[in-house]
Amino acid sequence: MLLDLIKVFLPALLAFALGIGITPIVSHYLYAHRMWKKKTGKGDSTPVFNKLHEARETGTPRMGGAIIWISAAIAIAGIYTFASLSDVPLLTKLDFLSRSQTWIPLLALLIGACIGLIDDIFEIRGTGDYKAGGLSLGKRLLLVGFVGLLAGLWFHYKLEVTSVGIPYFAPLELGWLIIPLFMLVMLAVYSGGIIDGIDGLAGGIFAVIFGAYGAIAFFQNQIDLAAFCAALLGGILAFLWFNIPPARFYMSETGSMALTLCLAIVAFMTDSLGEGEGLFVLPIIALPLFATSASVILQKLWRRFFGRKLLIISPLHHHFEALGWPSYKVTMRYWVLSVMFALLGLIVTLVS
Image 1 (cartoon, rainbow, N blue to C red):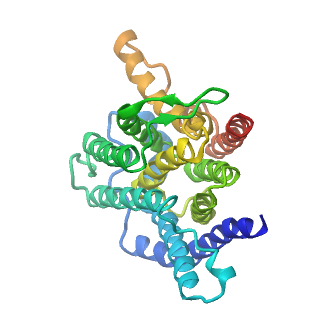
Image 2: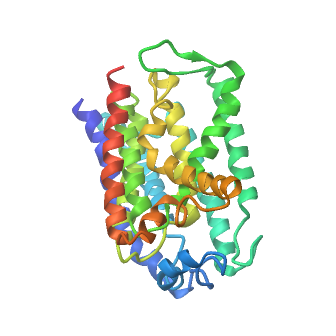
């Protein structure tokens, strides 16, 4: 047990230290090359958003989410290299880079990071599908769906996953339908990435979510996966150290896409593969993400069918700002709710 705890806590501490260490370098590069949006707001069609954020929309670099996956990746590679070169059996046991538990979520993390990085670069340069730059939403969803398809095929045909866990009941057998379910879950989780809209908001929520799934994996004896989640937690906390108001940089797509794609994989990893219900509790633990994307959908449907807006502005966190809540109050209350829902999700999956 003690060795397992060290194996989990060490990557978190190392990734955090690495993130703090590389941030000055990354930050200097982002500011030196003016890596921020060149246009204020989202255009004349969003006056409420522009009023709330025009002072911060330009002049604050994007791509800060790179700190998360870079620090986590270096920590993972560093521990793997050190353990491989060591002749001490105790030290070799600290390596958690395993084919059975961590290769797939790590690959999803890096793929999402690269796609998001490309989108960020387009948006900064003002090129791409929109005048403001960046890949169109349709193209991003297509790419995310394709990653979900590949992952679903791998889980079904290679890992022979055909069911999902249901608390207090037998697993629900889905057969090949696990593949489209994988795609839908990945798209749904990715859609919640738009919560990256207020200083410190996304970082705190993702930290809680991956901390919760790290705990689930640990109690399911998926120690390597728990250590992987801990490494991400350390990287997120390092990012959050510099992202709390006033943010030195924004997470943007390279961070949010990397984390959401990885989160979908982790949820499936802690499900039938871990003899748990990791997928069932995903809407509970990650409720702030799903509520954010749901608020955008409801806003569009409300305007279409009733001819008026349901919220002053969507997503939901901007609605609270428009009501007059200071941004720090929105952020901290979201953090509190995230912890509560994470605890609820842990209770559901651990006592079933």
